[in-house]
Length: 316
Image (cartoon, rainbow, N blue to C red; front, side, top):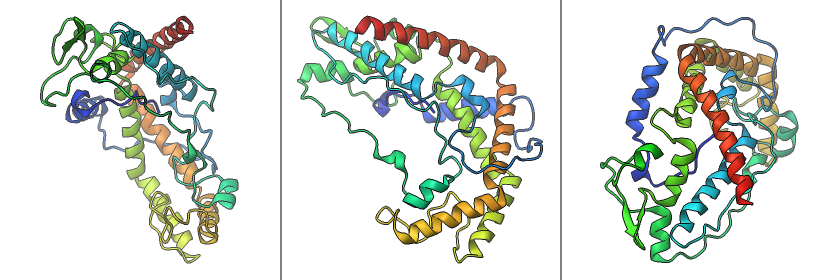
């Protein structure tokens, strides 16, 4: 799922406002507490390459890489207005479109047998060293520290008409949140009617959270737990921390033995197939209830990707 570059908490949208927004959307068009109907769950185990209807409205991993590079181009353009350069430009890299390998807990038999509970995705890439910034350069990049209760522009359209949380460097107005926030707004929230990616992500997270509490998934958890118990492992949920396993022994013989049994019980109970089927039903309902907003989000995503491609081409 896509998450724009994080900024200082003082300049992000209120979590309470976002929660109310999501609650209002998820409760429209029917009883949100009623469990959606599902058909027979197919037999599934590995979740890495599963598909979800909400994927159509969010950037995949490759698109996220393009957006990250384009945002850095915009940050550099902003810094250049003040005589500086942005040195930490990311490069879009080709990756799997989606990776849901741990969405329902451990589900890859080969990785379980080789790595136990260790996640091969955790190695990541090393972040480049942060260059030393002078006071003005730091101010231009990050903007002012402000009282978190003070309102700041939520779109680039508003920012261009507002002096809230701005300051001046070299005779020019530094935008609220500095060049990092300006680049975010230009790419992700250019106008007041933009559907924020966080809103779309929130609909998906809400569907996942509801599916996890669904009676059919809870029943599958119970079946899986009983299977694990029959082999000497006391654990209530496949999403719980494995008993006796921590960061120091994720790939120990003990961890590998338990991971193999975890996979075996998921296969026996079809936990992944049941959970995925239930989650799809919640996502379908969210899409139906928010069709107009999501259609707009899809069009805006397409426009955003075209803009990102043009920025990267111009910045090379």
